[in-house]
Image (cartoon, rainbow, N blue to C red; front, side, top):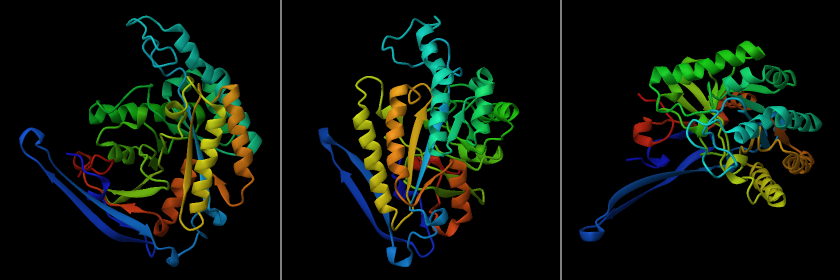
Length: 347
């Protein structure tokens, strides 16, 4: 059984967090409606009298905003990759338009997003597939040359969670080696295909020298999980601010997208007056790199840059800040993923 987070973690944050309650629910039935179940939940609240926002982010900033840019074009299978065409192609037949859809990312999308980031003076984190980097090495080098982070996204655009522990480790290590060889930068951050990893992922990433991963959409701030006596950082990801999930091509509304970005920003900015907050925006090379979408992002960035106290940060910068300011960072003691259903140490 998978239990909610409250059953498996303990939060510690010096002079700021205090556990305020726990609730248990037990439902027992019999006969045709026979249901049994149990859940426990613990909640924590911020003691705002113990601190203020000064020091939560660099220079007293009240909100961190972090962009991810997925570099995937060229890493997909030539037949069967998901795209905008609803009809699945026959097995084994090269899907020419879908592959061209992916290629848009490295031909047009990434260069356009990079120019947008330059316009606003923002650095992002690019999660790169090894095969995609091999397909477009000059573009991978250009991302790093412009000051963006090169992070790892696997050997190819596919799941790794069904691989054995050693095979998954090799799948990740292959992408690290490719990215480092081509860009000169060793990735410190990891993102899996659809965030799905094996239960061994934190130990594996630790063994490979990673600083953090993003494969958990459970918080609006970074947190630390102790793994084998050492700290490992989660810089949370997002579904609802992710273009591949929330804003598909069909029925996409640029005004609604821009409003969603502003609403997310405004709420977190308001909360950031008294607690550490982070806004995460995920972009994909072949989706957000289209001309109309970049215009919507441009308008949002103009709005966000007009606010004081906003730190636009790469994810490795956020992870380093969390470790360097551990006293103000949630530390979550977790049990095995087989028990909690969440990333954590297996032993």
